[in-house]
Length: 101
Image (cartoon, rainbow, N blue to C red; front, side):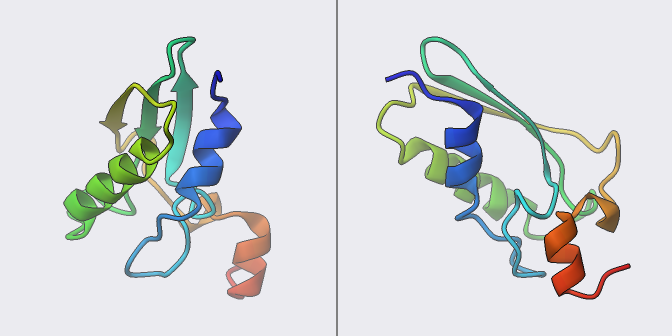
């Protein structure tokens, strides 16, 4: 089975930002997902800020969650802070539920 970007994003909805309690996809932390025909996964993402103390554990949780998908062969996570994360990246429905303007 060849995986899709949606498969990976769906799996990552099980990984939560520990400070805010929202999944990393809805938080807007995932900037890009690439799935090769061999089911290698390349993830481009950010954190809420460069010094996030939960960053290393979140990256580990993300890789662990992706590797739970049996078809995944390799996982590479590229961390970027360009562009920097802002609350505007949070999913609109989640922002509304949190009363973020």
